[in-house]
Figure (cartoon, rainbow, N blue to C red):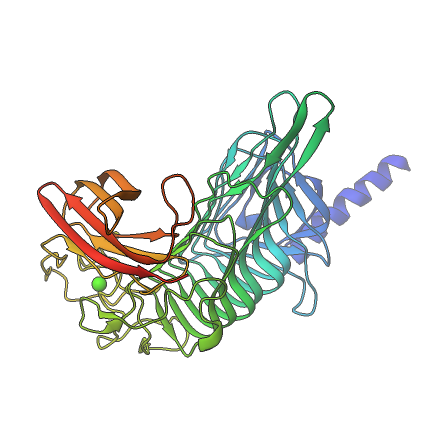
Length: 476
Ligand SMILES: [Ca+2]
């Protein structure tokens, strides 16, 4: 009788598999999920244990039940192909699964050509309590209908009285992805904690995050496309986020950056974003070669600097721009889903000339999808041939101003501020620099860190035998 029951269970399972063609999964999972056993239905929380790996093959469907998650303590490799995407979704469009939670693991996880929809946070990256870097690659994926964030990263440093604190680092790459109908596209949160030991002092650990967000489209984002947030123990541990060549269309905010994040934000399009960029605190984030259109003027750059957003010069296409070569023109999209550019777009070849060239060999376009020119026609590298020192901006200023210059070749550079008596006040740059457009801020303080008084100051750029001096006026 007992044996009979076993046969019955086995038979039921086989029938279930063949009739419904699905595999139910829960608990510990690893190995390979292949097309023959697809779809994989997650009926309870799953875990990829530490040291183990889960591979999901092209074409596989993963259906995750309401509020459920896949914890990845080891590694997940979900790599589809352009013709056979992997689908990760809820049983229907009114239900939301939780997330794929990749945590602590320093084995590189990879998600490519995965379509993820109806999640709380589709991908949740977490590193804490270690002194290590976690790198996850998320490329060519589609995210839609994520109620909190499509990708949420968290780096949490912990206190440690013996080693002065754990300082984990999160450094994912998100490239060629498409985000739509999500509250937040990508969000990274750094924080930590401290401990006080009598006689020994306070020991703090802080996390850092340097995501590379490249060539993605963010469309219909109800909150923010890219958000960098700082929690407790905000220690600037070398977070260097890069947001480059993305297209953001219809968002409440394009980017939100908190101090001490120091982000590079270049070659992006912000189209119909209520607020293009909002900065909180004195972030050193550098905004260059972006295109803003139909922004809310008064909120454009956020607190505290209004340095950018003012038309003061022309870019290499002859279009009006600010000192960071940001333009404020209609990008002239060729279509309303992929947001490719037309040949008349002011974004064509208007990106940073020092960034990687487009596949057609031309200077980088602004936005996620470049406009391909006739293959084989390569224009000359159109960088300024001479060293150029630009007017500081704003001028007069209080308390800070921006000084910029262009170097055509790698050079030894000295940028110094003098008073009208010829006394050296502040050395801003002294060393070798690459061929590029460089921007520096002067905060009105001398080398000792003291505020200097109102008056005329001179800034001098010396590059080899090239020396040029310009005047600026500080009015406190
Ligand atoms: Ca180009």
